[in-house]
Image (cartoon, rainbow, N blue to C red):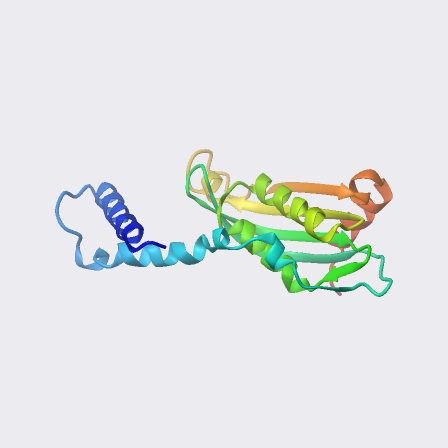
Length: 193
């Protein structure tokens, strides 16, 4: 990223700090390096902009006749709401049924991270993951379910601390076939012994 953009971003953070603290003077000692630290943290928090699904899902393997559900569930994710710049986090469940090719399971986690590490809304993350899986892997079907708690609901506005928002995107056989949809939901709900 251009050094000038970084300097401008740090200045913007300093202005926000002054607004929050109602200060026209210089930053107090504990805040002097905060603008720099905030921008460094933003580089990590919003690292999803530098990634794309094709590169993440480019390494596939022969499915060797496997035609069942591949499910990676209970993946923790963190994102930032584009409306209030508040964090939201929760669990993601991503499944697909391969036709000829499978992908390493870490790739599903990376796809989730790519979409969640952007300014987002939960609905877009859910749809984007499903769309990427269909476009790149061309599976028989895929299912994406996200469950998250949102900072904009917890610490401001309606202040509903225990509210969990669930979103889902079903494609192919998971959308068309009620039995397949029931099976994936049962697998997600199954607890480990």
